[in-house]
Amino acid sequence: MKKIIITGGSGFIGSNLVNYFLKKNYFVINIDKLSYSGNKYNLDKSNHKNYIFIKSDINNKKIITRTLQKHKPSLIFNLAAETHVDRSIDNPEPFIHSNINGVFNLLESIRIY
Image (cartoon, rainbow, N blue to C red; front, top):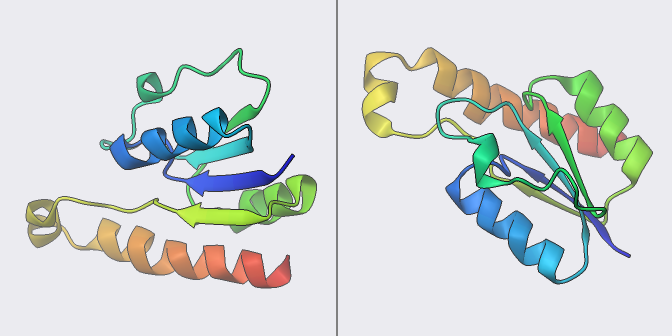
């Protein structure tokens, strides 16, 4: 059984991608920090044998690296991001932290893996 990691898997697009791969009989690891756009109710998979949820920010390199080494996925989808452009105008720092630094940390963890 192929294992995949989906970051941001509790958002609208991510939760649909999680459901798609579960129907295709993949083992899915969803990493999401559950911010304003992620909602744990999008995915009530607590009893699904092929699903693991990890509440974490992609900036947490230790958790990302440990998850990669433990589960050895064959695919990774990064959908973790700050969205809503209007929010970035008022306060750009969270967008830089997640969309730039977070992706860098994710890529570094993948490189180590």
